[in-house]
Length: 232
Image (tube, rainbow, N blue to C red; front, side, top):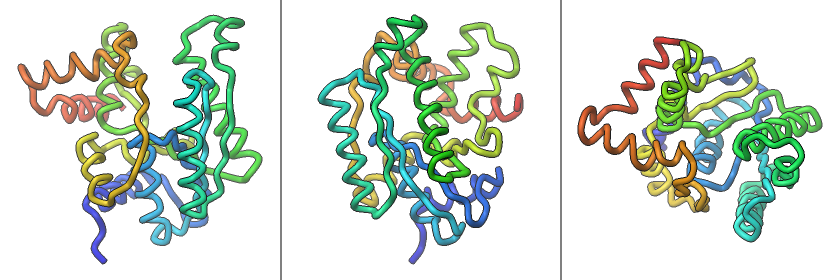
């Protein structure tokens, strides 16, 4: 059976950046949202071709009460349905914030990486797959530009880091990912905080980028990703 175009495109990314080798054991970070579900489904579609084993990891930050419990239950159910090892944990990010200050976003990011690394050591995963896509990269480049970043910041999100963290969707636009999920009829959950305009990233995603695309460059995200690749 012919592969979906998105799966074919991701396969090229995996090969281009040498992200996977035969017998790799891959921990897929699954929040339950569309990007992570698409990442999981694509890697499952390519599992035999690359000869890899797959597990799922999900961290509840303890910030969204019932919504977070819903997400964790969705991921656990998905893991059972797929017959995959699924590792779920809860972190007290609010408690850490009260003790250490700093931004909740930064603390959450650090907690996620600590969790994935613990699971990798405990269960023998040698790769950790993350669901960042081309839109995420464009947003980060603009955020770093506003902060006055140099070439490192403007190089965006690395497709592969430390030969351990891989981002197979990094060349895919969000629209293509959503079309893929629709085509394969995959269910997912939505995080309401992604629409919270108090966060700079959300304002860039929902206000700035659409305005720039409409008024100046319809292919803005593609242009920013190409610029980041040049800096890298």
